[in-house]
Image (tube, rainbow, N blue to C red; front, side, top):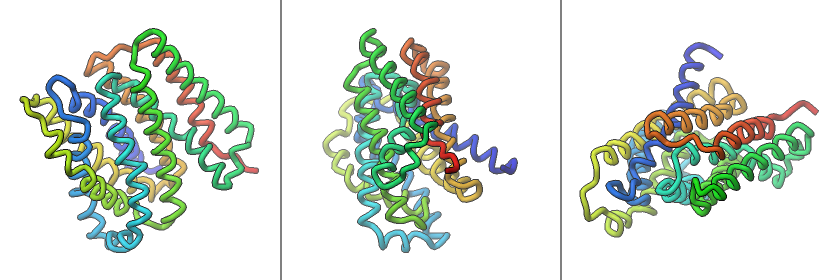
Length: 290
């Protein structure tokens, strides 16, 4: 990996690790936005960044021909998961949300096996799935039993993770040669249309803090628009397998930033579950030669 790609890889990990912090601030029940407004704001900004790039590199209209596939992708990648995560972060920490999302490779492995990928039965991957689920089980159990986090909010983030896992596998199968920038730009535009009624239904009738406003803007610009553009540029250079390792950096950034910036507690559930989920996700997503 060249120095340029390494820098972009690290930057991508940071930009996809920090959105949980931005979301936590933006959806604050006291002086933030409704989660639906946050989803709408971030996808509008993201689409305004990605679609011009896709038009410039002449991939936009080619991808648009497959809008039906992109609509399904948008449903499971953005429409569902982002409202679930935003709602959950009104009651759980940003670090815990980021940690739960790191289970995506585990669910991806299981879903891929349903589509004929029998490499899931490799001992190392099975061990990874077992370790990962043990981590999630202990994390959910400890957080719930100790009263550290809301169980329903935890389940919302797990549901979002399953949606993420399915979305990527689905669009990869339907549009294997499609431009990631174009696909996500169009998906964000579709999501914006879906959530547009939120402006009239959920627009706050009270003052919103400057922190919430800035967090929403930063979420859209850096963690939705720029992050996607950088990630797909890096993936084109180093391949999807190595690029997928960014998942593990995301989690580390999410937990650390939540503790440092938002003074979130480093709970027993996170301490126990973090290494198990990360190790399990890594092993579950690693294929070995037959």
